[in-house]
Image (cartoon, rainbow, N blue to C red; front, side, top):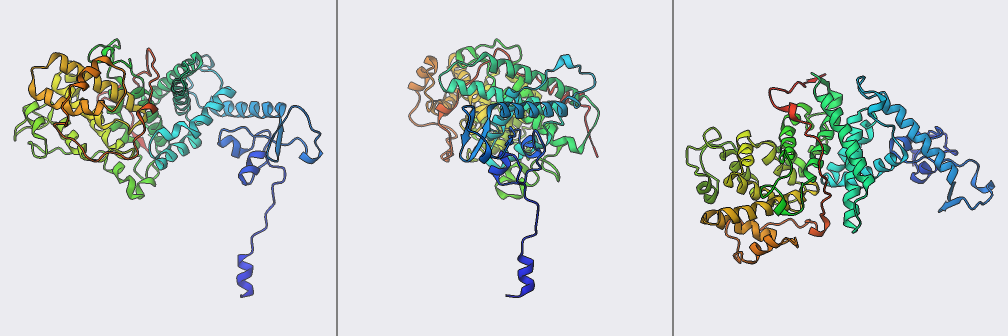
Amino acid sequence: MDTKKLALRKRKGHRKSRSGCRNCKLRRVKCDETQPACRNCTGQFVTCNYDATPTSSRASSSTDIRIDDLSFSIPETKLANDALVTDLNQMISSQYPQTWTSNQFRALGRHDIDRLSRWHTRTVFTLGPHHMSMCYQLTVSKNATQYPYLLHATLAMAALQDGSSQLLTGATCSANSRQQYHYHSQCAAALFNDRLSKPAFKAADRNAIWTTACLLGNMTSFLIESYDPETSWPLSSSSPSPFDWLDMHRGMAILFKICAPDQPGGLFHSLLQDPTYTILRDKWIVDNRDGIEGIPWQFVTLCGLTSSSNSENSPYHASVRSLAQIWNMESTPHTAFRFLTFISLMSPEMKTLLVQKDARAMLILAYWYSKMFHVHYWLHQRAVVGCAAICIYLKRYYSSDYLMMDMLQYLLSKLREFDTGMPALKELTDVLSPVPSILANDSEAEENLSPSHWDPWLFSEGPNAILEMLDSENCQISLVE
């Protein structure tokens, strides 16, 4: 082989880090040896630990904990934790709005650092398919200390899942998890409202704003007023605003245009180069044709649609078109984001009909709920309970409407998959027709999670509705370079 080629292949010399922290040694990455916490560990929100002296010269002690060939002492670990907390508090405190005083927020503690770590290693992967989750993870890693609203939304979501996990193991939800969720969600909502009320934001802010909106929207969807359909809307509603979650998702359509996560520099731009995720690019493409072509005859009859029907003369037309557009898509975690378009683009007239408990509007919503079973962690429980409550309501008050009762058969067949323990629903599913009579979809997602995976974490109140100003007359934000 040529001597020049050998020289080219020779590795460049570099200074080896012999006094780096244990995490960097374990990961086999170069440590900058900044003490008490290196930049690699600070950026990953993990505790940075250094050897006080070489391991070989250290005397064994009962306070030493040994992991493979690495050892560290409890006092050193506490010191490193405290240093990391101090560094993060210094970084984040200067980012709060000037109108906020130190009395309006508390300093981060070591439990918050642990919560951030759980979000990065657990919670983030409930936000969608793996590569999409990694986009969110990268954004939070880079921007959490610069944008307090993003940091608090992240901490709130981790606390929310902490409580849900406690229920899954059969334990009761701890008061601390509830308190942490309420504190961080209120901070996130207030700070996010403050940011959205300003007339402009820079392009560099858009990923943090979009990610925060997604986190708050998911949490609002997750928090349902009751696990029992009999005490849920439309059968009952103790909540003064049972459609806050819907308003959040409707605001997302406006934010998508402003934040442009699909454009260069946006959160999903590189991801969209993968053909698997082109569905994100097509998320907002709607079928706005007039007439009834492509709409199942049952919905045509139910809603009184004709060849001249459109969104201007029928409050149902746009939602039925949107439902028909997604109905034959396979239900997977990828397509779940396309399904969300149904509620994100719901017209104000359709929402008004839902508030008024219009039977046709509720049945359309129930069919959409059935598409969200299994495929979206933060919406699944609402979809199951909401669909069940609507079915019971329609059966109870519209049993003489033969078309509506026929259309309920498909929904009840889907609900029978769940061991709900709901007596009223069991009575209905026990007498349903053996074969679903409408719109049965033969292609089911193979990646569906077991129903036992989903459990609610119930609160008396959820996050504030932080997107009210996104109505056209109140929207003040715009994108500036």
